[in-house]
Image (tube, rainbow, N blue to C red; front, top):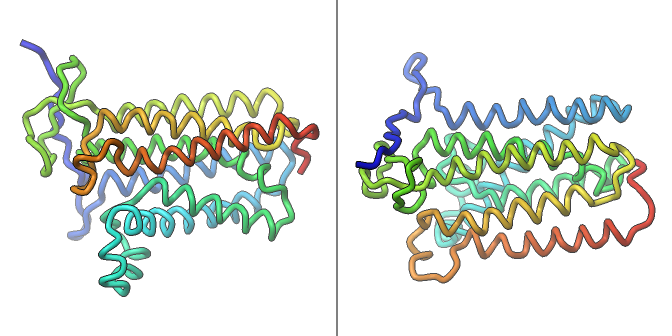
Length: 272
């Protein structure tokens, strides 16, 4: 008889005066805290004011929440966006967040960093190259939070490391499944290590867009592939050749290729 991992973990750590402290919320906060430490370290090593890291963190926090919520509604629940716009605006900023789309968060972040770069007169790709390690690390935290929530589960499998998600309310509980959240979390950790290695090798001499291009290509290629191992998130994806996560990942990969081509064609380096 095959041995599987029985996953009974509750999404709630404990309650304080009736208010639950959830694993996902803890991971969400941890993503920003860890990312801030990394960004501060990078800025300090390159002689940039730490205050800019503080400001950039605020941009990132606002852009992540708004972008992820807007992306969830626009990509996955568009009818609700137009049927009840007032509820949409409330849900967009008031926790708990019932749906967060990582592609929407990515779009929000790139817009926010553009605004920041213009206000601070810092090259845009300098900012994105310095932020992608923190995004990779944050992705590891978020996907681990999904694991603790027993959500975004994988498809049934017989691999010996399969999980049986006892708190999964959407699918057959006792069916062993790919721990897709764990796959993505580990991949994000490895991507974070790669990004930091590239930065530590050349630091401020890195070509503009090199890290951003590599990050986008690897992250969203893996996302495209991992989607084959995951259950669909919404009903309209059933019967589709590619689900929404895969469809949205294709332009992200192409965008990364374009940035990488730009990085190698541009002769100068990232002097900010």
